[in-house]
Length: 242
Length: 314
Ligand SMILES: Nc1ncnc2c1ncn2[C@@H]1O[C@H](COP(=O)(O)OP(=O)(O)OP(=O)(O)O)[C@@H](O)[C@H]1O
Ligand SMILES: [Mg+2]
Image (cartoon, rainbow over all chains, first blue to last red; front, top):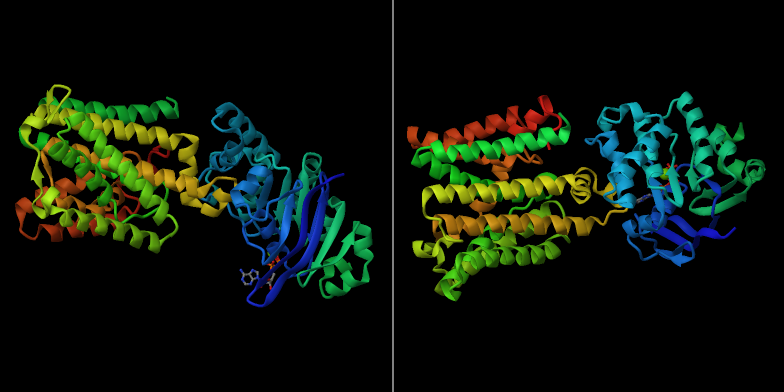
């Protein structure tokens, strides 16, 4: 498998605080990778540099073998990255239909029928089709998260970056989400930041652990789960220990 | 009736009503309405940027004036007939909005408001400075003999109303078309959540620039027609008051609605017209009415209509 995404010495500091430090990271095409780590480990900062929301202090990002470090956000998205925010970010005053249509139209242009099809498909996959005419602000928080994932699906990305997608979802919704992730895994490469260990253990093929901005461990779910350093980093976080 | 059919019926209905009014109205309201339609075209242009893209400009008078003076000066000094003079006004507006957009869009929010205000002040002062050509504050009259377009005498009230209506319909339907296209939907997306739009792969800067140019060019077209139809170009049209007016019209009528700019312009025109006939403190009454409206209809008249009755209103 060739690397779809690679970072070399990627770093970012905030006025002296090393949020991400010298991260070398390789993600092969087609893999589902989980990125975990305690609060403040630098996960969001790291993926923000991947999509270009944040400029690195140093280091490079390669996407599909191409150096994209200097490219603006929209250009990287055009190359095939998609990103869902940790703090839900949708178009609250627009309908669900229009939210997803905006995601699909960038790829499909003015082809109304194709856009319509893509919108229906994406909304039904997250189970929100019946709400298509409602405005996003009328949805529960959990449903807004699902809407954001539908927008990701409608973009048909090569790399889908999900920043804590299950945050705020009810248990039943999480079960559905795991199933959805399983399906998506067959279509695209996924980088998943997740605190819910049952999701990570069931879905991820490989896990990268970030701690204080550096890669602490990397390996299969079993390896990472057994790693004493990881357990130490998570001390007091019952999810991993249990 | 499908949504598209309903939308077309409403806006075409308005145009048809205005057309009929030309045959039945007495001279005074006929003249008023012609003026309102040209000013509403200006407001429609302003609304592209403010209502649909979410960018508040405090300097749109410079675009209105660019159209007016581009038209007027090319007639006065270069001997252009009406048609080419209108095109000169249009071109001046397009060029100015491109330059202003490229520079002002490096800023956002309050800074964008200030920068547009400053550019407009510069244009206003330039008009005064080159008084030799522009006749400064006093302005200049466009002779009746020159106000002929395709053989039509524009100083005739009936013709003038008709041309004002043609301009208004053109602006109304162009913007309706624009905001229903994918590019127009992106403008709304930028207004609602700029970062999300960017992360869907849209070039936010390019779309905003397009919005500034479309908005500025429509405003300039309105300015060019205003000068031609009413026979006068003056520096007061470039002053800050003419930057604030379209903002008020759009806010009153409903920002981000197609029909709102017309409703707002009509409402404010008659509010001032009627109250000034009653009392010398008419600006006070107009002010109170504006405050009441912003309190009880914060989305503007058409905005409230959309919220309460017609969710499909574009
Ligand atoms: N814009 C910023 N300015 C200053 N400090 C920041 C900024 N963004 C993040 N940080 C700091 O960088 C560190 C890493 O933050 P980041 O949000 O990347 O962590 P995270 O792993 O995503 O945490 P969480 O699991 O809570 O989402 C934290 O100490 C945070 O306070
Ligand atoms: Mg985070």
